[in-house]
Length: 203
Image (cartoon, rainbow, N blue to C red):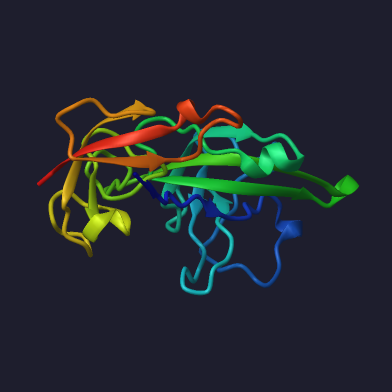
């Protein structure tokens, strides 16, 4: 049984103009940020995905807004926060680990931000080839002996051809009738039988 690496994008959400470095693009109009990021606020991607950078909160009518926050979850500090995994609603396209730095008082807090594209495509939908979670209806590409497993689009238009389709996500063991069992996320500490697995059939 192999593990499927689901990547949570590690970002810094810029809530306050005072915390930004450099000169923002003229087209970007930040939305009010004194209350942090909330559900229904909108986000813009980093200017260069290749070199990394920070997503930023913008007004939803800004031309650079591409996604809307669907859930915001505050994280505990220390190891618990570092080990936490997102619990996003269905249809989430991005799960972002956000850092909120407020110059006044030098307070720093962390949270998960779940977001969905304002317009299609929606990689977080079943079969869409992305999103923070593996769900029934998603497809994966596997190499021989499950040495590598990656989520991909079910319609075959992704970079990798789908080899298996997920029938369900179970706890610990897949029922008969499935061809592969793939670890999803991490088990709860000290509870190996809590490990979630994606059960999939060969295409």
